[in-house]
Length: 225
Ligand code: SF4
Image (cartoon, rainbow, N blue to C red; front, side):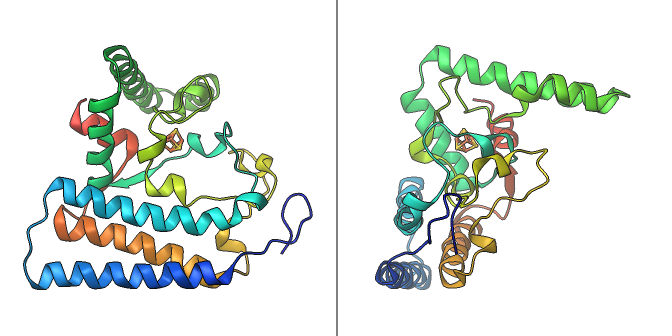
């Protein structure tokens, strides 16, 4: 398969095998903890989540030189991002430890602005016009003016797993062409491994928190930072 520059995409299969083995170890360890009814506190949960993020990041790093996702690109930051409870909790902790009061107020302002926009859209006859004139306000609340993610080190799984091999223009919402992601490449083994890592993130949520999923915005509204 060729990428947006016409280069043949390839990857190291040994890395995939190694990550598959690490994931199997991870699953066994979770099973052991459950069978022995070992208590897990939030800090343990965050460490487990970070382990899964690292496996996913290491795997997808194999494709770094072939993808059009680069620092500063934010084409996917205007789409809805679904998260699990532990992911939301880890982001909340990151905000408490790293954001200044001004930054927190700025996030609150963005959250409230989006709540108001949603109400306006519901009551308006001309919601298409509202969406068009407020496009920027529909991007992620953590997307900064410097075109960077304010929570990059703890960004949710769904922001990590989305890699694009076609031109980044294909990611634009109104574009007729679909981006080429792992889903529509012949790399089925890699895609399966990414799905299996994702499944473990859901299992952590189901086992240790709840079975709920939220959009990032919904979660931030819920916890009222
Ligand atoms: S969390 Fe970061 S990477 Fe994910 S959508 Fe928001 S700004 Fe983009």
